[in-house]
Length: 87
Image (cartoon, rainbow, N blue to C red; front, side):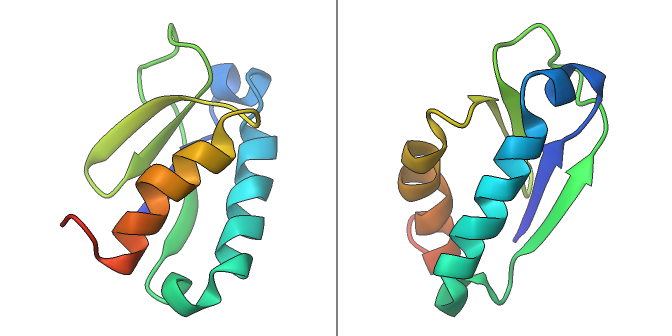
């Protein structure tokens, strides 16, 4: 699984650094599932007019990720994908 967090100018201003840090912490806390995860930054995804940071997981795009909603996003969207559920 490849998780890319937009770090372009707009997402940077919307808090992408905090979202990256939260991903790093969450992956560390879920080491047993994180072995096959690549965490990377990417530049503009063309969704700058949306609220929050854009995150790409493999071929799927998620917008509106913020430090406030990160835990919900991670537990409901990312973690099941890491575990191979719902694929």
